[in-house]
Every structure is written in structure tokens, then in C-alpha cells.
Length: 226
Ligand code: HEM
Image (tube, rainbow, N blue to C red; front, side, top):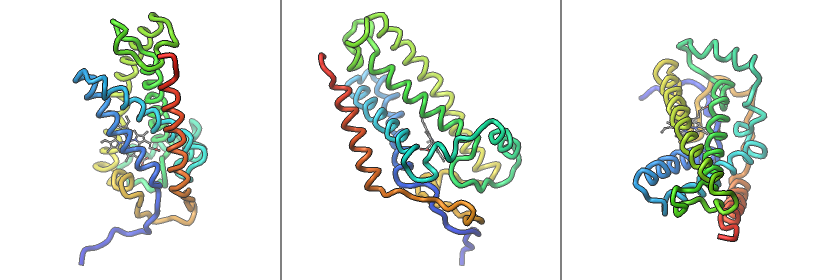
């Protein structure tokens, strides 16, 4: 009989966090490909999906399940430095949810993604044909500056997302801690659970909130006059 890893099964991520995460990964890939392929008919809708995902995730960070909440995982410099010392040790991490160091990359990624889509909404192309849906609200020069920043933030995002993926691989190889499995199934096997029980908010509340955010994004991107 195969030996099961020791520990207790703990639900560390709710469905909303997992679906939004893989939704962001897929939408990021589609946005990247579509702009390279000159497919603005796909690039713009991908941006609206990204805006919905990121805004939902930010709201979920205030009202969602315990491990999704910013108040639970965003910590001060002392906690970050304290965790950073153990980061380099080849020891398994038994943190429930984001650790203080990982939290920095979560906030950076969500912030950069939000900046990226908001800049895209008002970006103006050189011939002003392939512009964002809210480009009519700004001058041509402002729209061109937004487009330049849209490209710059994308470069930074590539670096931060690359470091994020490297960190996840580092945990797997050096610290022998699988973070990817839990981001797929929501479950981790952990030795101690009693100290921090996690409260999971109903998926129906998540769905209702997601549809509401999607509706608001749709209202925003169809804002007249076109
Ligand atoms: C295929 C490559 C990727 C893998 C394997 C991966 C894996 C993961 C894992 C395991 C976590 C949870 C880390 C933890 O336990 O603290 C996570 C969180 C996160 N990742 Fe990724 N990731 C990938 C690509 C990306 C990309 C490309 C982005 C954005 C551009 C991204 C954005 C995020 C965000 C925002 C979180 C925080 C999740 C939340 O709290 O809602 N990831 N990722």
C-alpha cells in the first residue's frame, strides 16, 4: 500500500481564489498572444475579463474566505524579514495561506495587473483606430502616454510574474513544498491546523459578487459617447 504523506487535510484556498488565479494566468496568456498576433478584437475583451477578475479578487480580499483576506496575509516589515530568514533554509513551509514574503508578490501582481488594464482602457494607438474603450475621455497625448505606460507595466509584469513562478518552483525543489497542488485542489496536508482554522465563504456569494463586478465592468467599458 502506498504511504500517504503525514498530516491532516486542510482546505487552504476556496474555489473563488483558485478559479480567479487560473483565470488570471489564462487571460494573461491570451492578452499577450493577442497583442503579438495583432488581434485587438481578442485583446480588448481579454482586458475586460482581466479587469473583472482583478477587481473581484480585490473585493474578495476584504469580504472573502480567511486565506483570501489582505488583512490576514499582508504583514509589516518585521514579519516579512522574519519569514525571509527562513525562506533560504531548505525546510518545508507549513504556512496556511500566503506567507508574509509571498504576500508582497500577490499585492504587486494584483496592483500591476490593475494598472495594466486601467491604462489599456484609455490607451490611444498611433492612428487612434485601435484605442481603448475609454480613450475618448482623455486627450490624444494623454492616451499616447497611457499606451506607453501600458507597455512599460507589461514589461514589469513579465519580470514579477517570472519571479513568482521561480519562487513557486523554488518551494517545490528546495523546500519540498508543493504550492501548485493546493492552488488546484484547495487542499494541503499540514501537521498543525488547530491554531488557525480557516473560514470558507459560500461559493454562491462569490458567484453573485463576480457577476456584479462583471456587470459594472461592462457598464464602464460601454460608457458613452463612443
Ligand atoms: C503557470 C504559472 C503559475 C503557477 C504555477 C502559479 C502558481 C501559484 C501558486 C502556487 C500560488 C499560491 C502561492 C502561495 O501558496 O502563497 C499563486 C498565487 C498567485 N499567483 Fe500564480 N502562478 C502562475 C502564474 C501566475 C501569473 C502569470 C500571474 C499573474 C500575471 C499569477 C498571479 C498570482 C496571484 C495574483 C496570486 C495570489 C492568488 C490569490 O491570493 O488570489 N500567477 N500562484
